[in-house]
Length: 234
Image (cartoon, rainbow, N blue to C red):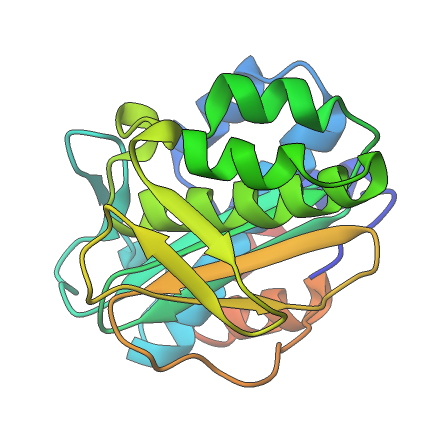
């Protein structure tokens, strides 16, 4: 979903009451208002999906984390999810198997230099044989694909980006090395200025993206919220 350009203070306060105290503390540590809004909306987006799937109150949702910081939903071990945000977009993916997702806004960068620093030798070789415009485009393809993979395995940047290789053979064909065979990738066109990639341990990706807005996800959360909680916030 696209993040609203402006979230009025009274609405922000009301929305903040829907997330955990831990998430509020994390938001307080962020210096940029855009980062705060992205973090808040990302949390609300996944909460709305949990409420809808399991028909539970938002207050019942508890997140737990593995040793690398990847979140899971307490008491719902079959629910796997991942959230990513960049620029004006927040995206998430859910399944009953391991999944990861990454979105990045395409910016003018020194793709050649960054690829040499972070990517594998094979990936750097591919990028070095492209012109500057192609390098930037391909860099973000690889970056989001690689990020989606390390988020799927749940180890974050504890897995070095240059420890495995991904190659985009065509618009829909993606090959890789030093990654187990039971991992699959898919890219989506969500916005011409962004790259969006998903990874999963099953080849069961949705064909289309569902676009939501802040009002829809809040309606879903409040649908399963207790009346006492809603009245206390008004």
